[in-house]
Length: 151
Image (cartoon, rainbow, N blue to C red; front, side):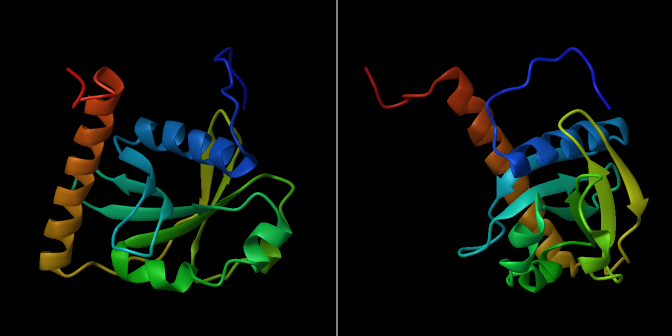
C-alpha cells in the first residue's frame, strides 16, 4: 500500500488514521481525525457516510497502545459501527471479535471485518452530524485564516 504522496511528520497512530481516511474516501465517507463527540472523549477517526451513518475508528499502533486504552467502550454510544485500525503486524487476536477490524498503513487500508451495526438514536445522530459539520467547517476556516481575531 504505497504511493508517491509525501508523508508528513506524524505519530504511528496518526499514520494509520491517514490511511483509514484515504480508504474511507473511496467509499464516499467524509472523515475527521481527533473528533470530540462530547467532553472527555476524543476518537481517532469519526467518519460520516453517504447515508448519514457514523463510524468510529480507533487506531492502535502497538500492543501497549491497545492494552493501555480502557476507554474505548465509551465510544460505542457515539457511532453506528465501531472499528479498530491496526497495521499488518499487530496481534489482532487481542481485539474484541464483536468490533470491526481495519488493516491500515499510511497510504491506504482494508476493512477485514465489518463492525456490527447499532443504530444511533435520531436525536444523537442529528446532534453528532451537526457537530461533525461545524468541526469540519471550523478546521477548514482555520487553514485559510489561522488568526481570525488579528487586525
